[in-house]
Amino acid sequence: MRNAGMDAPQVIEIAPQLIASIRLCVPWGEMRKVMGPGLSELKAAVAAQGIAPTGPWFDHHFRRPTNTFDFEFCLPVAARVTPVGRVKAGQRPATTIARTIYHGDYDGLGAAWGEFEAWIVADGHKRPGLLAILRRRSGVERRSIQLAYGA
Image 1 (tube, rainbow, N blue to C red):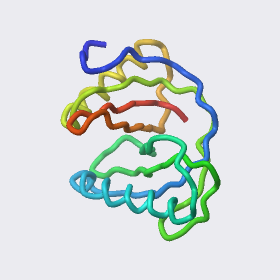
Image 2: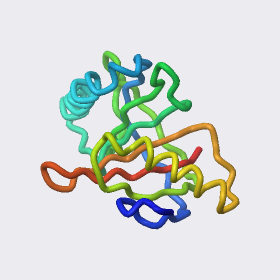
Image 3: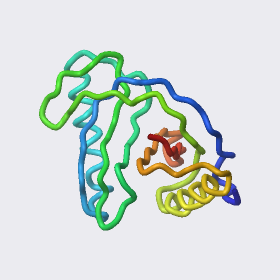
């Protein structure tokens, strides 16, 4: 991979994990507008039930974006949530994923994602239809985003 802002990809196994989620399908231009409020709604619903998050939030994409994003915000949780409003209970299954960590701003994410996809194919892995992006903050102005392909 050529992108100096990305770590070397890895193929790893992940364990099953309980999640709370909100699914949305929004136009491309609305994505940035729904991220903050949607995540706040999800975290508030989980906290109101006295359930602790067990890791960083992530978004799970059901297909490659076209003119819309079909995705869900997910928060790993210590116990099964009771569905309330748009918040649903679920479980991320155990699976094998390919992942890399992108260090940079949102504007460079598309190019990094394309490069990661190319690595998956070149390394002989089959690209599944479902996408997930695990987001982690590292400092106020810089973000590290874990890109992952998995079922």
